[in-house]
Image (cartoon, rainbow, N blue to C red; front, side, top):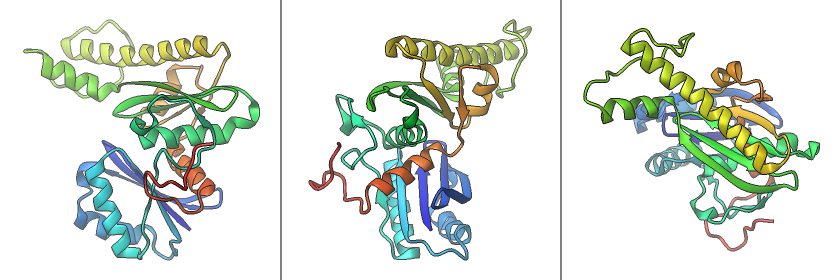
Length: 264
């Protein structure tokens, strides 16, 4: 049994993976993932299972160290931290792979592993606090992508950057014509977000000169799939599956920068 952890800006997600099955999964707000909380929750999460390997993908460096120490204390296993120098299921076409978020690498790895047999481009969209677009062309080269704000960041920016616009709850509205300030904000955030993703999909498709397979994950995945028929698949655990794929390709993941790891 492998324990896989995805440490994001908004949530800490975990999965217990055996073969091609996730037996259990956990989702906690990142701001509630203090040492005492994690030390109490993690052992109950993997209760009755023997953990053999631990894989971690993280965009929060302070949380990475914290979780690494907790896992080592509780299991005696040193977590394997995903990094750009390990063996990947695709070739790397990114100009600065050392700056590439490991959550992006994992999402791309998971998406490509699911659909590489179709010989089509694959686009993974992770729609959470930020919206990440990962693009692998039909030849199996990671081409990069885009990073944009998610609805909560847009809402926070509107609140901080103006004198009179209020903080609102994000409730879906049926019309782009808001009949109150609250509804106008909700309409602008909602439809602006939807159209932003739709526009990026169109632009990426034109850049690839071929229709890609579109996979979406993250907290806004189901919301986007409801409005955008171009999305082929919603995969809630895409990043976890991507970490599993990278662990399969790297029987022992060396620390970042180790010379014995390579990108094919």
